[in-house]
Length: 253
Image 1 (tube, rainbow, N blue to C red):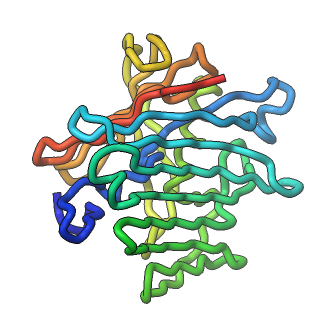
Image 2: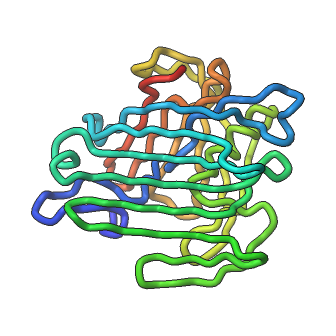
Image 3: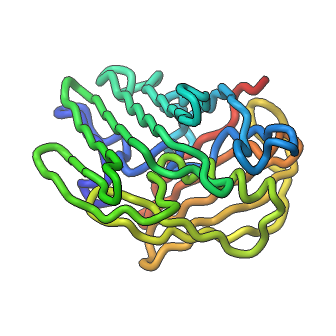
């Protein structure tokens, strides 16, 4: 894994890949549906779920995700991951991603995105703010001016789009316009077969969802259980060198 793909505490070694946005990573987590009559306007209900985070199969931390209506038609999706074991705990590792959006055609459309990463007294921040037909993007000392495209979302809220589409019976391949630091690009996902998956919260039949990447190397796979309202119960990210970061459902209502 390249150095930019990790968060490293000085003198504490490597332990936290920064590009694993616990969506991430992702993501693809924590999705509960609203009644059918309201599905088109607000396809997902508010929720609060917890996941264990593992690195190479060993406990690393815990992630809490929540979705809530915050103001009129505005919604907020919050992902909060913190280190609870080993070096991640000693360095105070913490990642917070906050997406504010509105539902448009059943998918989350970007209003604002905030990313904050703290480890060993070092902080990394990133932000996207929609301004009419533009997106103001900042990443540390760098800034970018992006063109807003209808339906564009941030990388954190892609999980909501996938959950909403699966709830509507999507099949095959899913495509989304995603705004990141310096570009608005397509992301693609392949829907696979149902598999039996074990988690600390129980065992579930879940549909396999894979991120389709243009370049070989990193892979991201998520399993989503229809029986829990299309909640992602497990996400596994594997790097080219074999290192893995995994999230598994720990608690649900």
